[in-house]
Every structure is written in C-alpha cells, then in structure tokens.
Amino acid sequence: MREMQERAYEARFSEYLLLKAPPASGKSRALMFLALDKLKHQKIRKVIVAVPERSIGSSFAPTELKKHGFFADWDPKDEYNLCTPGSDGSDSKVQKFHAFMEGDAQILICTHATLRFGAEGLSEKVFDGCLLAIDEFHHVSADADNRLGELIRSIMAISSAHIIAMTGSYFRGTACRSCCPEDERKFTKVTYNYYEQLNGYSYLKSLGIGYHFLPGEVHGCHHGGAGYGQEDHPAHSQCEFWGEHKAEVRGGQPHPRSDWRRGETETRRRVCSM
Image 1 (tube, rainbow, N blue to C red):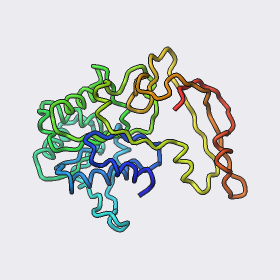
Image 2: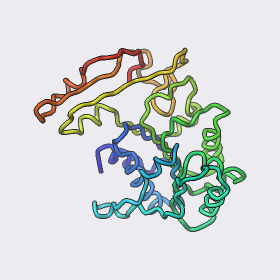
Image 3: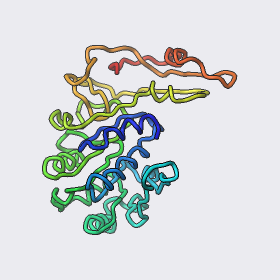
C-alpha cells in the first residue's frame, strides 16, 4: 500500500469515512482495500461504488491485489458494472440495480445518477449491511434539491449502511455544504494533502496547479470536499494568496522541497489556507 492507502486502511473500522486526497494518490485502490476488508471481516454483505460519470467506473475494474500480499483480489463482475453506454436512469439499469440488491453478488459499480434512480421506491432499510462508496463526494450537497445528498442523508438516518466518501477537492466552490454539521461530525476524516503527495515523488519534471472559483460571495470557509463550515476549520481566520505554481526538475534530479513549495506564482487568487 501507498502511504495514503495505509492511512485510510487504519480507519477501516469506521462506519462513516471521509477520504480527502489529491488526484492520482490512489483513492480508488484504497477503496478496494477498505471494501474487501468490510466484506470479509466486518459483516458487510454488499458494496456499491458510485461515480459521477461512466468513464470513471473503469478506475474500479478487476484488480489483482493478492500478488502484492493482500488477502483478496478486487473482482467485480461485468454483469454488475452499470457504467456502460446508455441512459443512467434506463429501466434496464434500474432493474439490474434491484437484481443486485436482491441477489448474492457483492460488488456493483454505477454512476451517481443510477444510484439515485435505483434507490427510488426502495426502503432505506434495504441498504442495511451495505457499503456505499461515493466517489467525488463534493457532488453531494446539503441543499434540499440535491437528490444524491438527500439519499445519503436518509440512508445514514435510517439504515445501518457504511459510507466511504472520497474526494480530491478541498472546496465545493459554493456556499452550500456537502453535509449538514451533525452528519459531518459522524465521519472519520483521513486527509492526505498535496504536499505529502509531492513528497512521494523521486523525480518530478513539471507540475501545474490551477485554482478556479465562481464569482460572488461565499459564506463561511468551506474546507475539504465535505464542505467543512467555518467553525470546523482549524485555521478559518487565516487566509493567504495562492495561485498557479510551477515546479521544474533540471538534469533529471529533483529540486529540494522548498523549491517547488515556493514555486513561481503566475496568477494570484485569494483562498482560505489549509
């Protein structure tokens, strides 16, 4: 396991787990480790992995883990990979979702939309003993009009389902939280930041990071994909200017960490410090 995956695996017994880590840090593989442990050792009977768009479903394709020393392989069946062409709310996908919930298969991969459509008309108690893994959790909102957010809230309130929320975004980009404060406090938080990610590289030729924000006022400091409120932010009163930074490697050798941290500020934008 990578450092981030080990950190997440240490929290594997949490009923609600929020994993915040940069892109390409290994969140998908971390989810595989966590889900398999819950299936094998924690009496979880089914795993539903929900992604925002069909193309991302390939990140959760069958993966050999035993050859690297883990106790099981990640082996979802093609029949229950619903990230396939066609409408996410089609009758065939909804029927397949229902068949999965009623059958013996253990792993299903679908889009957020298919999860929403598939759950319509089902009791929240159907999800007892299930793990819901929500990729790109910043798509969830506490807004009453956000159907995915409402589904997650009702499942947490009524069923015994476990939730793993994954996000690479530190900000939602709007004033609306992903979760209401009482639900946020239920999550065990595992954070792996960009500095830690960069420190894991031996060689880095170049790096560009851009920040883009919607215009208008944002109330509160939203830290993390889960939409942390201002009162939850350990440094909510501290802000600094960040922007697009570039780190370069010359002669095949990495610069010391201070070089890429200092970087070259190209566009300055005011954001809340993390």
